[in-house]
Amino acid sequence: MAARKSPSAQHRGFKVADQIQRDLTELIRELKDPRIGMVTLQGVEVTPDYAHAKVFFSVLVGDAEASQEALKQAAGFLRNGLFKRLHIHTVPTLHFVYDRTTERAADMNALIARAVASRSKDDEAP
Image (cartoon, rainbow, N blue to C red):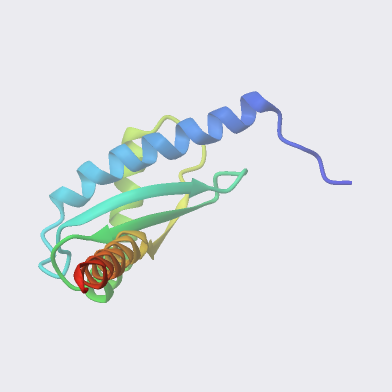
């Protein structure tokens, strides 16, 4: 039977993930790689042992795949920066994941707007 994490351990995991997100945001701004566009970190998920962290990001301006590749290559540098900022025993290995949520939301909004526009045209017809 798997052991469950205590609420305080879960809370600490969320706090660590939140701190990683804040620190990475600052560290990514310092990167000079032109492939990294205007990246926004959407969230961080940390494994219970803090060995790995999935970093979800979106891109406002730039190529998502190029940004992901550049972030992968900078992961060691970013992890070293986190090591200097975080006061935890294990700094996680970073895994960058492109988050398409904002893209999907924009697509859904466009579909809804088109549906509303076509419906209003149908309502105006005699």
